[in-house]
Length: 588
Image (tube, rainbow, N blue to C red; front, side, top):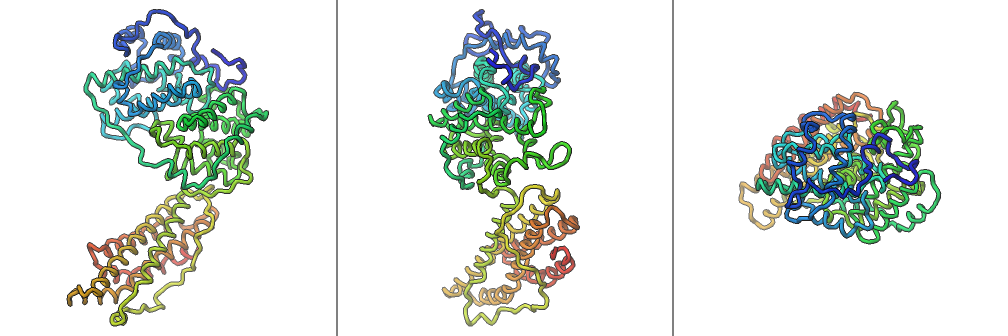
């Protein structure tokens, strides 16, 4: 079942031999299916015999090549699957599996393989976490070599899973399809039958053992995060028109895949649409990367295994600026970072490919914006596109500083009773240091940054968060007492406490404002330094002191504590002196 034009294939001959199944219309008696419709594990074990490799042993390429015909025979002889809702409930994805039937005419074998392989990985990860109480390995091949899965499922099921999914030296179906390598004609429907059969058979094992699987959930609201990016609605006809143009970057086989993808979107299969679109975008970018670096796409896949992280890395393997960064506009690169890579962002491709997202997470908005991204990178290059990252730590810090500033401004408008206003202490202005005021609303750079910048930004973020908490506590503590005073609810002791608080209030408030001013100025310097930082260790040491000060402030100002005096004394005694010692750092 090869492509009509073999030159269009993105598979090396070695991988094609492992993946592509010939003669799949096997009408022999099926000895591998048990009477209940699951796998007959004993017959499978007898069939492979001495060829079986234990889960903790490697599967080299020569072994995988030698076992290919045998494994293909098993696939061809196991093409009938009895769907059982009961035996598929352990996947926590039955509705998604069921949806593949309705989308079958549009999604095809390739799209079905994308979704089923992700379900297998997610479901096995749940078994691992249930068994061990720990987060499963991120890579499926590592998960399939764990003792935990063998304890629950047995060696033979894990062996079959490894042959199909668990080594880059074998078929490696999950990685092949999710990185966009095969065409529709290169992925036999037998793979999908067998994946469903495996899921059903594993469900039977778990049911027999009365093994209850605990499900992992994705805490992030993907659609909400995508909406926060504020991208325009995309008219998908623009992508359709682009696909009609002649381009040597998109083969005929890829055009067919894109037509299927758009058909899924039009028919409301948004989850399936995004699952199809992202691997195709990756393949387009891989081909572009290969062209820029003159890499032969016909090399073996393990030599040409360029994935998204490599494609968009800031430097290439020689350590110089990645050529792909010169091909696309900075706005488009920031968009790609936000939607696919940023830890605080949707990370759609990562979560989708590992099966972590239920079908309801991908709605029209998400699918539409993913198609927009695909179009911008393939058909438009983003020359007129405007976007700034909102999920990069630098952008998140800027937003956090604005929120912290607003919290402090509330403390400045507290109305004090005239009879107590005289209690306010006036700070000695000579004790304060001059720190320039810095604007924080400009564009923040996110690429080609100093290697230590992440650590510094992390500290600034923690300081900003704690300063905001301290400011809110300061406002709440003082406001609640003033309200009690107004309502004549304070006795003499409470009134004396309030007088002391008002005496310390200006100094404490100014200490918090001064700390925020420091953070804003250091952030400003950091964003303007073009990747060059001096005395990094000393900056980090100073910021750790400021963080400790902010944490003490938050604790002391908490309504549960109200221990203002230690903070008041620390502010007057240490804050400005410590800053003076580091003045050369702070003034850039």
